[in-house]
Image 1 (cartoon, rainbow, N blue to C red):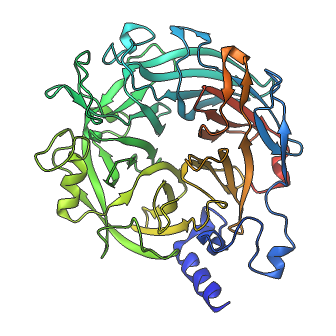
Image 2: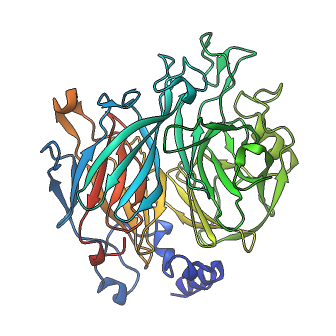
Image 3: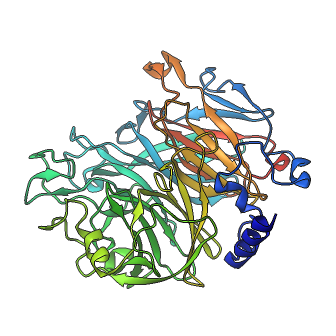
Length: 468
C-alpha cells in the first residue's frame, strides 16, 4: 500500500486527471494480469465490457471479431474493391477522421504498400509514380452505418504507416520506408531502380482528392510512424519506428496552417537519460528539452545506417533513444505515444509528454504478454479511456485493448478473421494486426483496420456501459 500511495502521488504530479482519469495507472505497470485488482473497492467494480464472444459481420456474415455482449459491426473498404481512381490497395494501416457534418464524417486511411507495381488515382495525386503506397478517403454515415465515396487522395509513396489529423483538417501521412535516389537502395538494402525521388517523408493529404498532396520535407527523412498536432500551438509531434535507437520529434512550422512552407525539427532529450528503452520505473518523470536537427532531409551518413541519419544528429547532441516508437495521440495537455518493443521485457511501453510542463513520464510498461503485447496505434476514447491496437508476433490473435479510469487493462476486441472466400480471400488472418483505431466525433462508432487481407470495421454498441 505504501508503494501504491507513492505511485498515486507521482501520478497526480503528472496531471493526468485533467485529461485522462487514470488515478490508478499503477495497475498498468504489468504487476497485475487481466482481471486482477489492487484493492477491495477495485474488485467490486467490473472491468471493461465483459467477456468476448464471436459476433457476425453485418456485411459478410462471417465472424470476423470477438466482442462483448451488445456490440455489433460491419466491414467495408476491402482490398481489391473498386473505388474512384482504381481499386482499393492492400495493407490497411493508420487512419483518422478529418471532418464531420452531423452524423456524417470523412476518414482518410493509409495503405502501407512497399512495392513498386505502380500508383493509383489521378496523376496529380502521385508523388513517385512507380511506388504503390498511398491513402484512400471515404465517407461514413453514422445513422445508416454505411460507408461510401472511396477515392484515391495520395499515391506514389512507400509504406504509409500511421499519421495524424492536422490542425486544419487535412491528414498527415507518414512514410516508414526511406529511399535514397543517389544510392538507388531503400532502407532494407534493396535496389529500386524504378524509383526516382527520395522517400521517408510526411505528406499533407486532402480528403476531396482534388488538391495535390504536399510533401513536408522539413519534417525529416526517416522511418516515420505517427503524427499528432497540438491544436493550440500548431506543433506536430512525430514518432520514429527505427531498427535501432528511435527518436521522438517536434516540428515547429513557420505557418501552422500551411505546414509545407517549412519549419524546424527538434528531437527530445530527457534530463539525465540518453536511453529509455529499458530500466525505467513506471511513474518516473523527466524534465525535457528539445535539440535542433540541422539537416532534417539527410538520408545517409558515413556513420549511420540509411534511415538513421536524422536520429544520429540528435543523439550526438544528447537526445534520448527509445525503442520502436509507433502510435501517437494528443488529448488536452497530454501527448501519449507507444514504444512497441520498449521495457525490460521488450513487449511495450506507453509514454506521456506534457508540453505545458515540458515533462515526460512512463505511464505503462507491460510485464506480461497476457496484459499487452506490442502496443501500436492508440487513441483516447470519448469517455477518456485509452484504446490500443496490438501488433504482436507471439502467435496469439491480435487484440484491441482498453484501459479504464482505474488503470485496468481489458480485452475489448479480438481478431477472429478466418475467411472462406469473402471478397476473394481465404485463410486464417487472426494474427494480422489491427490498426488505425479512432472514433467518430459523436462517439457512436469505433473504426479500425485489419491490416491483412485489408478491410475496415465500424463497431457500435452500448459504450455507456463501460469506460470507452
